[in-house]
Image 1 (cartoon, rainbow, N blue to C red):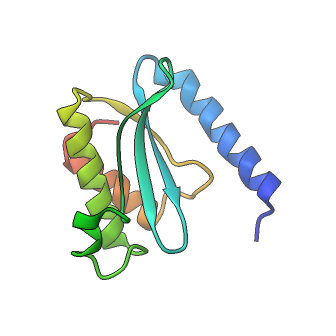
Image 2: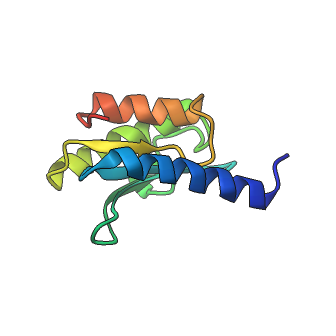
Length: 119
């Protein structure tokens, strides 16, 4: 298992690469715990969150079997895309953080793309 320091270094390295290519686009970031998944659309220039969603929300929690599978991640991706579009966001850059683009993280990104966000 990776140490906390190496995980933080990996996340910072990914974020640094993303900020180089992002331009004016907002950042869709993912946090994945063992039981839930969270997504936020962040405006780094203003320093605030435009839209967010997670498996802990009441409307999602009741309809999902668990918060720790690809179906839950897809539901969160679709919900965050819907909220971002409502806020006027069309293009984002995807920040996977220290996680490999596979499984739940990929399911969330694919659902957000289907929901109308372009990466």
